[in-house]
Structures are given as structure tokens and as C-alpha cells.
Image 1 (cartoon, rainbow, N blue to C red):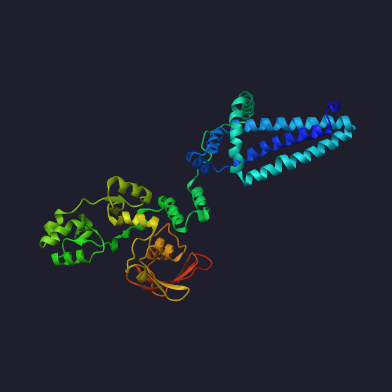
Image 2: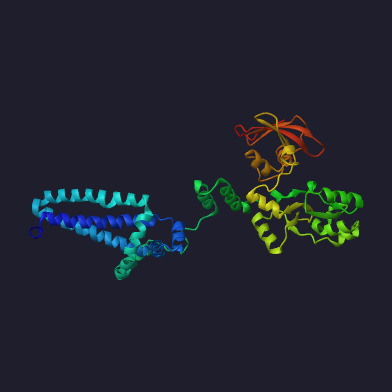
Length: 427
């Protein structure tokens, strides 16, 4: 064979074979490195190369079989060609030198370089390669089918089976990572909204509701003058109406329905009762994602949260859930300024009634949120008693000093900036 081919022809043929080997190696890496979600988006947008690549990747075993068939055929032919030529020219020593040189050339120019380039720019290589592989797969399908049949037989003997599961489906935590790593492609505001949506199942109505002792409503036992004044000064559009105690709720009053009566005459309690809507109750512990769907299905926006005994624990509204996603809609002057007062650069005077999750969000702290919902509840749980003024403890690295208590709860506590979290406590 060596006398039938010149050195120039051999080098030319080897260059062609190396180019083919580089194409097979690089395109394999490029196609397998494609971001499946970006690929799907481009395919839906009408990109021809992306459509062909997506179709090829729907059955990756066929594509890999085709690429390996071509790549191995090219490499084996090249090594056989060099081996015969080198043996005829230099015997066993020539064969050894030729094999070593060819191995080095293939490793650099047909494997490492094209695969690295493909990993860095997968779309630039994968989309043009798809135009080649798509018709080539149809032509070489019998050989690819036979190769895959034997390969699958080996895998079957080894106990490996195809599950049919979508290997590219993302879990919630993986999706959170994708959002985090989106960087400048998504603004900080929108990134936080997406993360909040993903967290809705982790947050329950108990975490965002107005607690029982803070519910503002209309007591039918009050005088009509007191009721009128409460309605005029109310910052809410919907109020629960009850008899004697909030647990004896009679219905929900939408203040807009009362506007016409206000304008026409002095209203009575009977007029007010006629306008009441049926109260809507939800069990405590309901995830916000579930409650949002229930609000939508029932065309509701106001619900009373009840425990297992039917006692009212608080109020949750559609606005409360939406604020978990987009942040506060309005600024209530009675909120942050009264609940958190900065004393020094490292200490704050905090109202014991504040919600722990809200406190963490406002101050970027990491107090436990799994148990009690308020700072008072958190302190009482840690101490297992109602503390006296002057009591000190440490929770999650925050030194907390009780400043004021009444008979059954902590009114105010001084909270220090976090230090090493030892979760110890002392009195």
C-alpha cells in the first residue's frame, strides 16, 4: 500500500480525516452542552437550526450512536492508514513513531481543541452541525439502530434501564439557583419576586395574617355613634362584624356597600347587618400558594383563619399574599416606626408583637421562623416562662434584653446585632 500512495497524498488524506474527527468530537460536545431551555425558546421562535437540534436531542442515543459511528470509523481508518505506511517505511520502529505522532495530533487537533471550543460556544457549532446530522441520521439509521440495539443489550445485562423520566425537569431549589445565577439578565426587584413566588408553598397563612388580638372589626354591641366613627376612621375596605367577641362573627362588611346609605341617611345597625357578606373561613397552616388559588376560585379576597377548634386566629387577605410576592403596597405609619426603633448602630428597640418573618425581612436577620410567629412568642418559647424586665437571652446570635412586659407578654425588647450564634440563654 505504501508504494501506491505518496507522502503528500497521505498527509492530505489525514488532514481531511482529522477535520472530520474534529467535527464529530466538537459537535458532540456542542449538542450535549446546549441549554435545553434556551434551545426550546429558540426553536419556538422559529430558529431552523434550533428546531433540528431539539428534534435530534429528543432521542439522544440515536444521535450519540451516529456521532460515535462516524468518529470511530474516521479515527480507525486514519490510524490504519498511518500504521501501514509507517511500517512499510520504517518497520516496527516506524510503526511505533507513527502511532505516537498520530495519537498526539488526534488528541490535540481532533479532541481537546474542538471539544473545548464547542463547550465555550455550543450554539455556534451545534446549530450548523444539526443540518448535517439530521439527513445523515436518516441515511445511516440501519447502522445506528443496530449499534444501539447491541449497546442497549449490554446495558440490560448490567441491570440499567431507561426510566423515561425528564432528566431536565428542575426542582424548586434548582430553579431558585437558576434565578439567583441569572445575574444582570433579571433586575434585583424581579428576581426577588420570582424567589418569593417559589417560596409561597413554604409560607402559610399564619405567617402573614393579622393576629387575633390586632383584628379591627365592628362590635354590634357598641353604640351606632362608635360604629360610625370606626367606619369613618378605618384604613381598611373590609371589616369583620361580630357580637361581643370576634369569635362570634356575624359577617363581613364591605365599606363600599355602605357608601350609599351614608350619603342618604343615618344608618342603623339593622341596615348594616343587611349588607353583611358570609364570612369565609380557612384552616391555619394553609400554604399561601394554595390560599391564593382558593381566593381566585371563590372570587374572595378576605378570609378568617381558624384553628382545629374553629376559634378565629387572625385575618388573611389577598393583599397580604400579593405583598409576599411584590412587597408592601402602602406604608402604614403605625407599622415600622412604632415596632422597630433604632437606638444605636447595633441595637434596636423592638415591639414584642412584631411578626418574626417581617422582622427578619426588614432587618435582614435570621431569627427562627419555624415555631412562634411573633418576637414575644419566640422569647417565651425559649425561656418557657413570661420573663421579667431585665431578663437577657441569646437567640441565633442576637442578644436580647427584655425592656418591658405586662402580665402575659413581652411588650418591648432590645435586640443587638447578631454575633456568633450559640443559641444560649441566661437570666
